[in-house]
Length: 194
Length: 199
Image (cartoon, rainbow over all chains, first blue to last red):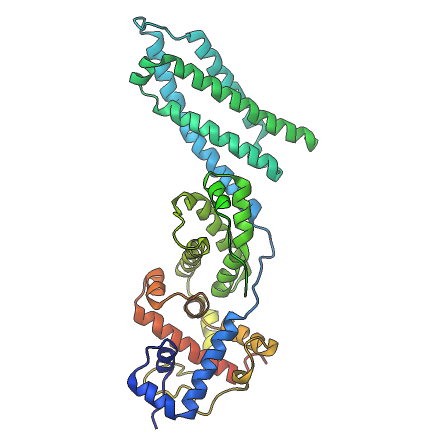
């Protein structure tokens, strides 16, 4: 006597069984029992207890996220600096602008930004343990710095000629954010006794 | 396994803006189902933890693309499944596992035409209630002895509710492959349970 195969039973469970399989299962106690066992097995699989990870992987995820953000900021920063340097050259050597940019102020804030970057590197924030609150604050500041770097990178010569003061303003904002970021790291370092 | 996976919209919005606290809250909400899925498919806790980490790195990278169509868990589960299956594809077939499985099941475990699926061989486990502990232990052990591919197909289809079409697409295989893997896996599970694999 031909009985249902597992393919037949799975199709019956899915409501897709052939006419032969439906008819056979209706009249065959063994195949009906096997179909019931299949239902039971699936129900048991669904009822298996949820396993939980032994280790907390969130710190690793968070560190990965922050590292990616820093890399992104670094990319924007390099291109931003290059663009800003080009624009600064244009601004200084184009005397016909109606409202010349304060080249000295631009140079000052750029130097200030570079100094802060160096100080931040010395703290090596990637290599330190940090609290979730500090990490969140630092990440928010880094995001805002990345936005400014993006604006610096995208500030074309035509826009800079039209609004030369924007360049200085952006650099000033960048310095302010860098100072806040330094403050977060320094405060945390002091708090943990580093 | 019953876990509440409801997430407030405001939390998703904050996560999309890059808020680390919101992202951690999402991680806490979904770490168990993601880990559980990966563990059931891959079996080794360290692999499952790696998939958990890779999944959430991808979630953070891509959450801005989540449009709110469908449940967030469905979107995250898709990423977790993809990461787990990618790990299977990249790993070489573990010969020891396959050999062990074959030794338990014995030759001729296919679900081909003409094979009697269960005549007269309904084991004691079949009569147990789904939640009974001995039945669960037996089934869990038998399930772990399936190959990675079989475990993936069974778990995704029978527990997570994926269709064969969805599994085939995720695995880069055909619908027939998925169906035949499921049938073979159930034949093996039944035989292992009947032969007392837990002993």
